[in-house]
Length: 257
Length: 325
Image (cartoon, rainbow over all chains, first blue to last red; front, side):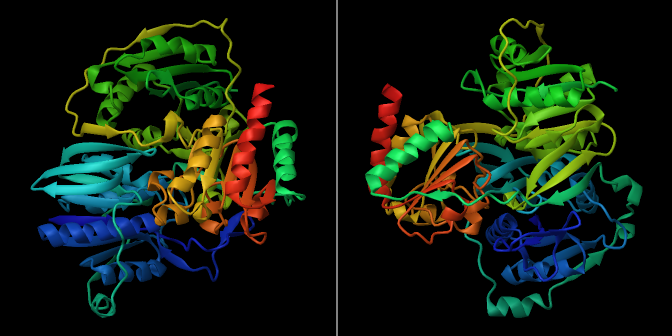
């Protein structure tokens, strides 16, 4: 089976966000594989182990992203592809990213493509479905279970807390929701092996992509931090009085009851 | 100013329109700059819901009814939407950033080779000058985004853009469009409802959330009672889900759901940064925790240092008193 996992390098979830001149400051920040993409990589490895084949992880970015690809290889992916856009593109949006990935994948005969359902930085969740649409294949988002039997696929997906069982077939793109699996930590032998696994680096020219064809459709004008909340009131007195006061405040001052 | 024709995809759930449909109409009005707002509804029986979109500000409504549209599938709804799009050729599109909107909007944007500004929580300006505000890094920061050119396509986060006042005197045309829905590649064989009492966590006006301090699955009972009393939904921190006190579908945070209710009551939640990312934009936050040093008090508007099993039942009694007066 020909399996691909789409991966994004994101800020560590513990990182505080700092902004300067309307842009995120990323000096010295810790970076990780987007947590939802880890579920995608883990599932890709499990599907390969059960059905045979090969797992290729793909990312778009600059050479810093090599670290996250090596981590995916250490988890057990077979090959990695870094599409380096650093010299070619200043601004990218979801249109840009999806088009580049689809251009790379269009002649790869992918049976299964996995991605996270959303990245914890941009948070739009667009790239997976956009790629599937560009490739002309079906997709199912926010999946929590995947069973493959030949080309038949049975999926459970999370729909705002409810679950839906879906029957479909390969080729297919799925996006991972929390609960799909427990992503493994790279083992020491895995880390050693990963150093020797193939990591291909491509630029837009290698994919015959003209910069104008992937020009972003939307533009970020400014990034800013939410206004600091004024310190709240911790109530005092005995508990019964506090509760009375709280309910009174919620009713009269906050007007939310 | 150039006025826009805007298509708004409404969303029905169990025979009623979801609130986000009306919020999307309000967003569409802003975007239209005085142009036309056209509501769109898909389902197996949605014709009768069209007039409600008009009372909330749509100028007219188009419905597509088909047995294959009873349940949402990206293929079915995608075909229906593209048929309506081809007929109307709008300048802008507004969806709700719901499970359905998140699934469908990138497909449509990809078909139309357009941009898509997802998960919008506020709009500045109107018409051509509209700028869209959306949370990034799970609400730790915000970005202002504009459409560079061509079709404008946005999805709006539920509970953030206020709907227009309902006006029963408004009238408008509700007509059906006939679309042949074929070749669905996904078949839904089962739907299991797990959400509490039909109140959807992401749309709830009140969320009562429990953390490790709830101590057990049974410990959620008073939280459920309070949520029910307030017409809200129950949520949880990752800690409570990891400890098996509740289903992961209730998880609020960086992984999990992002909620912005009018009232968020955090009970026995310490306030890890990942949890705060999912709820810190709630309008009013109440924290109940035994530990006075808990992080959650830093974002709370009102805090009670105390045992949730003592505080919540008392709150229920106090609120009942108000409700009966």
